[in-house]
Length: 339
Image (cartoon, rainbow, N blue to C red; front, side):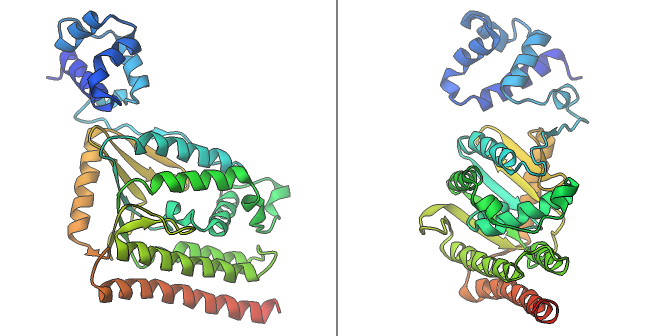
């Protein structure tokens, strides 16, 4: 039977794991609960119970989900803070930046990523491409009638220092964290389809922008192939090397935009929810399942990072052919309908 003492031990253990400096954990706990160190010691030893108010204080300070702690065998709790809204890209980026800053500082942190969509952080190396993604998200979420007729103008985002600055800082922080990523040959298809749709729907003020976005995707492929060859993250603008980068190709696991942030103390699982928004959880059952899922995925995937040249080139050439195929369609459309 799960008892109040079990709950107290669980809450305190999680709090200790999430403390930035475990050696000062008792001091931090005393500050959070506004208690003396002697009182805290007795609570840790189990001689004194935590009050409900104290549990709630710890939950707020250490970002604990209460429901799974009360029902450890059945409950699975997610946090959802929608940060993207049409016309509010800066707020969205600031939310990503704050969450990444918090997680990237955890001891022994690493990311495991699987996606069916253009990997958003790496794409921050190509601001025009990300401006197009923001434009598409704005239309998808619905905007007022005045804005609905607006055509794509990348300068709306590229001339905004708050947008470009936040993307740059996110990229800088993300590139300090080792990651293992799983791609498939269709990872560019959603973006390519969005470019084709935008051209056919007359959403480009200059149809040549559609071809320019294809060029960005080509450069994205070149850049990612370079990182896979070196086995490290590389800043596109100056060639600086970052944290280790491990890339795998999997043909069959195409169902998730999923990230596991795993550290020595705490793990978070993020999954897209109304993309580009997301939900996340630190619930043990969820992160344990996700970690095991990634490990299984790794054992059934083909490694591309620092792999034999033939293996790596074959994969990235498939991506290039997909971009080239859509570019040819766009050029034909422009020739027939625009020129």
